Amino acid sequence: MSRPLTRVAQHPPPRSPEGAGADSEAAAVDARVNLLGMPRTELERFFVGLGEKPWRAKQLMKWMYHAGVGEFGAMTDISRTLRARLAEIACIEAPELTPFPTAADGTRKWSVAVGDGSEQVEAVLIPEAGRATLCISSQVGCILDCAFCATGKQGFNGNLSRAEIVGQAWAARRELAAEGSSRGITNIVFMGMGEPLYNFDAVMDAASVFADDLGFGISRRRVTISTAGVVPRIRELASRSEVSLAVSLHAANDELRSRLVPLNRKYPIDELLDACREWLNQLGDRRSVTIEYTLMEGVNDQITHAVQLAELLRDLRCKVNLIPFNPFAGSEFVRPSMRRVRAFQTHLLNAGIPTMLRTTRGDDITAACGQLVGQVRDRTRRKARHQARRLIAVEPGRTRSGSAAPP
Ligand code: SAH
Image: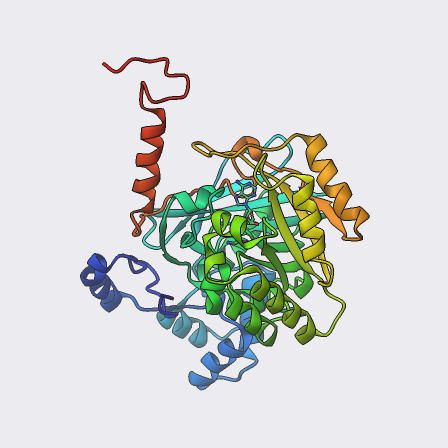
């Protein structure tokens, strides 16, 4: 499923198979390797392959990530000959970012043009006191179809490349710098569009660049991968990277969770929590798993659910993040009242489970959890199915109010 690492710089390969002919034509013109998002060890090998010293990787990373430079020509401490050679065979290309208007609470959202430029994913920057969290996407749409998530309704069209993943942070930081903002990105969360553990290699490469001192220099603990529960990858995660882990649980029993998160039918709750325990053991530090729980009125927000959840999490080193449901066009769920949310939180706290409330950010620009949609050339037909369902739901005479008569 993952796309080749060597990217066509000027004309990235279309993801759809019908574009294959045009792609190879473009590749003949330009097959430069994109160095953005390449982990340090691989970049060292790249330079050794050119007959250069491995420390060239350090030089280049400082230019790319510390100085935000994307043109080899500007890298003045690299010899002219090498710069010219690099320009011939390589490039530093990030996806183009287009800003949405800034939300009332300061949250910012960008549309990120990916692939051949006709598709878009979204990235969100959430400024808070003393920190700024960038929420990035890992796939075009999402292969999962969680009942309450807007991204899933868009369908799916493949993985982002590591350059497209790292590029979201790289371009966002460049924009902030151009605006004269002294604010850096302090935290990165893979909580945008897509299931990061289904794009494992690219996400691992990106994580290594985010954490590298010569890259973004963000502590591994502050880089968080959020997953709907891809068990085999969770088991592998600690051996690949020391990033933090968040698991989207949303229900404390398999019957309900399978309805909300269809992936649960493949990897049920017991297996999922076992994998989380294994991850904690492998890391061997005092880390905890973040359990995400989106509260939906009348679905999973009653005290009986909180009781069940507390019981389930009793022997897992975790903290719970409660997310009041964020509505989107056509969504069938409702956000519970604050009173109900607080009651749920209080029960978990009384049971000894650290429980935070994730305040809704940027919902006036649909930048909140689960509201990201982008522009996806869906190859699953899921989008059409959801749209048809919505049409039926609002068709005159079939609405609940039944007000309008058919023509
Ligand atoms: N695929 C990954 C990351 C994407 S979503 C995952 O499932 O974890 C990031 C978080 O937002 C997840 O916990 C997701 O379940 C939650 N979410 C999705 N839609 C939501 C909505 N409409 N309201 C609130 N949270 C939502």
